[in-house]
Amino acid sequence: MTRAGFTALDDELKTLKTVERPAVIRAIAEAREHGDLSENAEYHAAREKQSFIEGRIKELEALVSLADVIDPSKLSGSVKFGATVTIVDEDTDEEKTYQIVGEAEADIERGLLNIRSPLARALIGKDEGDSVEVKTPGGQKSYEILSVRYI
Image (cartoon, rainbow, N blue to C red; front, side):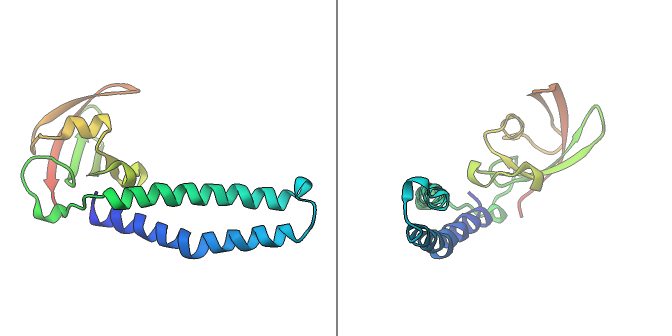
């Protein structure tokens, strides 16, 4: 994963442990004070939130402990993990720029493309000027690689 992706996951983990977890523990304690737990909606909601938080903490701890942080600025050459790739749709001439990142940090809305996606898999190993064919849910698409940068 990239340094930015690792930092974001680590920050989320710290927030969950230092802010969210103590807050939900307080909410459970307050709800317990209201008496009968079998009909206490606040208590059940707080317990559900606690379960979600604990699950997310475990998930993030696993991701952070196994993370292999790669600095894309030290890479060069053809498209590989960490590359920022500008492509153009050969049918519509629409340009898009994506950085190829790991699953945990992927966010297509922010231009962070999951390395396991069909588009990323098609781009891997290609160079500027190459054309790639990608099978998408909307049908076959052709893209030309305009630039490959490592920043």
